[in-house]
Image 1 (cartoon, helix red, strand yellow):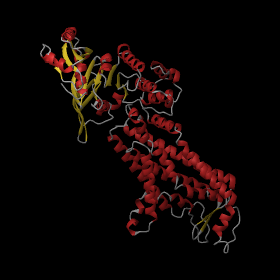
Image 2 (cartoon, chains in turn green, brown; image 1 turned 90 degrees about the horizontal axis):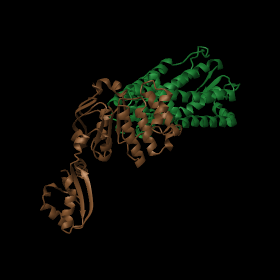
Image 3 (cartoon, rainbow over the protein chains, first blue to last red; image 1 turned 90 degrees about the vertical axis):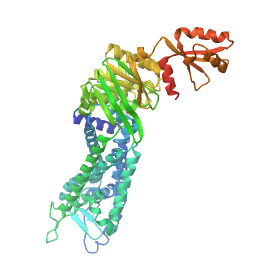
Image 4 (cartoon, each protein chain N blue to C red; image 1 turned 135 degrees about the vertical axis):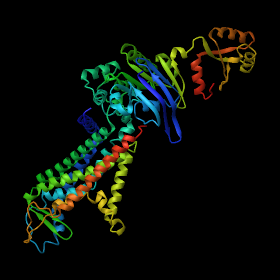
Length: 293
Length: 303
C-alpha cells in the first residue's frame, strides 16, 4: 500500500473527528478576544509601554499596528498551543488502542514502521494547519483591522524598530520555526501515546513535561545550567530571534539582517534532533509492541 | 495445509497464556477453535495475525512465515478479533471504504456496496456507527474482514453479544463463505454448540494447551452419550446405579445431578430401571461425549 494512501487515511480520520476542531475554535476565540481588547484599549497599553522612552524620543505613526499585534499574540499563545497540539498527537496511537481500532488496522497488510511514519506525517500536517490558522488570525486579520506600519518591539531595556517592508518575511520565517517547535511537541506527545491506552495520559504527560522543563529554564541555578541547552523547551521560543535586527555604526537597521542567526539555527537544529529521536524511538517501540487492546 | 502452527507459546511475565500449541488448518475447511474464556484462544489468534509476538514456536500461513512475508500473508487474510471495533464517528460505508483501502487492493465502490449487502447493512450504510446495534457492528466488522476477498477468514467469537437471530445469521454467513465461496474459515467460540454446527474440524484448548483436535464428526461419537439425570432421590439413585452394569460410567458432578456415560440405546432401559425401583425421574439431558468432556473442563472438574 502506498505511503501517501496511509497518510490520506490518517488525515481523513483526524479531520472527521470533532475534537480536532476544538483547537481551531480555541485559537480563533483567544486571538479574537486579544484583538478586541487591544482595539478597545490598545493606546493606553502603548503609552504605558513607551513611558520610559517618551522623554528621549519623539515617536510617531501607527504603533499599535497589525505587525505588533501579531507579535504580542504569538508571544502569548505559543506557550499554550502545545496543549492543543497534544490533544490530537497524544490521541494518535492511544486513541486507536482505546477504541480497539489499532488491532483492526494491524491485521491489514501495513508495515508498523510505515503506519507510525504516516500517522506522524498526518500529525505534522495537522500541526502546520493549526499554525497556519493561527497565522491567518494573528497576522492576517490584525493587518486588516490594525493596519500596517513600522514594527516597534519593546523589551525591558530597549526598543527595536523594524521598517514595515522588512517585517513580513520575518513572520514567514518565525512561523516556519514555530512549526518546527510545535512538531517537536507533537513528536513527544506521539511517542508517549504509544505507551497508553487512553489519550488523557499522553496529553497530561506532554503538558507536565513542558511545564517542568519551562520551570527548569527559568530557574537560575547552576545545577541546571548544563542541562538547559539540551531541553527542547529552551529552544521553542527561538522564533523571536528573527525579530532581532543588526544595526550599522549609525545605529540604523540593516535590512534583512538577523542579529544572531547562528543561535536561531542551532535552536532549529536541536529541535530537529528531538523530532528525529522521538520518531525513531516511536518506531522502535511500536515495532516490538504486543497489541493487547 | 493452509495454516500450520507448531509448538506455539506465549508467556506474559510468569503466566503462560499459550503453551506448546500445535495445530493445522486445511484449505477450504471451517476450523473451530473452542475453549472457555481465558483459555488462550484470542492470544493464539493474535499471534497468528502478528498482533502479538510469540515467545516460541512457528506459524506458517500459505506456506510462508509471518516474520518474512507478513504483508503478503495479511493481504490475503480477513479477521475480526474479539470485538468488531470501528470508528464510531464515521458511517458504516466510510469505515468499510477506509479499511478496504488499507488492504492494499484496488477495491471498487461497487465491491464495498456488495459487501455491505452481503452482511445486510446496505440500508444503514450511511448512518454513523455510534448508532449501530451490537449485531450491526458485528456484521460490519465481518464486512471489514471480507471486503478485500481474502482466502483465509479468522472470526474470533463472532456471535458474542448477538441475539438468536443474529447468531443464526452469522452461522449462515460462515456456511456461505465456506461452501459457496470456498473460503477457509477459522472460528473461535467458548460454546461447543456453535462450533459443532459450523466446523469441519476443531481444536479444544484449555489453559493454553491443546486438549483434543480432530474432525468434528469423529469427535462427536453418536453411539455414546453422557446423560444428566435428575431424580426424586439422587443418593438412592446413585446407590442403585453403582450396583448396576452402568456403574463404570458414573461421572463426578459438582451440581446436584447424576452424570453417567452410557450407550445411546441404553437410555430408555436405564430410565425404566430407576422407575421400577420407585425412583422418580424428573429430568434427563443427553449430551454427546465431547460436550460432556468440554463441560467437565469448563466446570473445573476434568475427567
